[in-house]
Image (cartoon, rainbow, N blue to C red; front, side):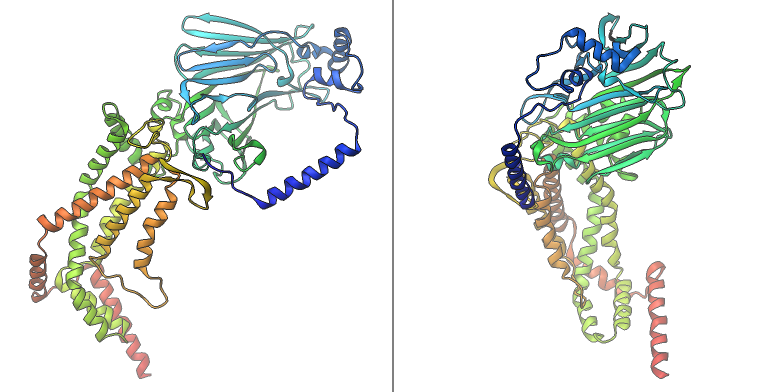
Amino acid sequence: MEEKRFDPYQFIGFILIALILTWMLYRNQPTVEPTAQTPTEAVENSDTPAVAAPQSTEAIEEEINSIYGPFAGFMKPITTQSPILENDVLRLSVNPKGGILEEVMLKGVVNYKDEPLFLVHEGNSSFSIDLPLKDGRVLQTKDFYFIPTLQKTGNQHQLTLTAATAGGQQVQFVYTLADKGHLVDFAIATVGMSAYLESNKTPTLNWATDAFRNSKSIEYEKRYAELTYGHSDDKVDYLSLAGDDEETENAVRWVSFRQHFFSAILVLKQAIDQVTLKSQDLSEVAALEERFTKRYEAAIPMAWNGGELNAAMEFYYGPTDYKTLKSYDRNLEDSIPLGWGIFGWINRFIFLPLFAFLSSFLPHGIAIIVLTFIVRLAMSPVTYKSYVSQIKMKVLRPEVDEINKKYANDAVKKQQEVMSLYTRAGANPMSGCVPALLQMPVFFALFTFFPVAYSLRNQPFLWANDLSSYDSVVDLPFNIPFYGDHISLFPILASIAIFFYTRMTTGQQPMPQQPGMPNMKVIMYLMPLMMLFFFNNYASGLSLYYFVSNLLTIVLMLVIKNYIIDDQKIHAQIEENKKKPKKAGGFAARLQKAMEEAEKQKRGQRRN
């Protein structure tokens, strides 16, 4: 469990607030403050002394009638239980006040405390429609009291909520939930209100959610908690992951409040312009005690239909799982950050289906190991070429050192001689870099794949009880900056493997030290240490992959070195190549010609 970081300014602020509150309590007598949260509460508390007797029901109704006139019926409290909609994966509870979802529970899913997982619970979400009136007022449906009617038709459960006035005006919310799946159909309709509604102003749907913390590491979860939205042209945008952000966008088709492995998505039937979206980081708000990661808000303009409001949309409440989201054929899977460009393509068409196949009959930890074997075997020709290049550079190193000493004061001549040596020997210093570049797309694709692989959630392997979170073996009584309050074992093993791999690769080729430049060998050895810190809070599945991958690479290089490549044969081949005159071509020829031209210009300047 993560410790809250100590903030001295926050501590001083608490002391000041405590002193101010003590002074205020000493000076003032306690009174009951009006909350004005609902019309009923406002009427009960407005201008009423704390010791006054409660108003009668008739007095309350008279007060509501005087304030809301023909719409007083919307505001009159109705005593009724919250109806329940339920299917194979969802359990929804709807509050008659406001007609909003007051609870959304995912069946068979638990959070990091092994508690039932709620996406909506204890007032963390709000939903309301603003209805502008001709007299300048705005009615908010969150203040309405609805009468629920629940019925089942075929394989669908339908809940109709109706708020009505004495004059026959109505506002209806209709929730429809099928027997299976995570989609909830939602429809809004006003009846008989066109004479009161201001058609020149736009009704607005306001939706907000405080995203619950559902993982052990709130910092890690926050990296993947994000507000994303899709446009009518299938383009996907997002608000900033770090800090607070706000945007107003056009042609919005869906809005996703992502909580890393779980999402609440509003799907619109048609693209809407001027949608205002907000995201706020809540993880550092001390009063919330790290219960939430982000606060999301969306203000969506709606359109009138014949002077009334008639709109239909859908809600998705469920896992941020690529296969599940794709099954609904609404492009919702694009809300998952699988990587841009080629990285996303590799994940979508290679790693997602391959890992789904492997994990269908293997434990997930074993599936990761098998996936790693497949990737390393597929990349083995690249590893072979890279290692051969390193051996050639090692063989040529003594001669390169001699050239460096001989032309220590003439950089251009030194480069010319080195390039000439490489050309005559049939070696290319760039050939070791090209294989590494070819592996980069695979490296980055897997780096984005494992943190969003929902199938890893709550899957144990060895000492790790959840491959989607860190594998703590020691919980520390203190927090280490940039590291955390625990020790994860897989990152340590991965860092050790990377250290030995680095020793093997840097030992095969020189690390020239240029004046004024940092020592590259030191930087190379810092990488394992940096990875140890960086991955301590990351998904243990990712650290497991890097550990096995580097271990396999080391074994593969040892096999190539001891059983496939003969250093003496390579050395003999290089010596044979040197005896044959070889004309430089391509990049090497152009580089050598450029250096010769630079040398001629330099000599001309000396003569002048």
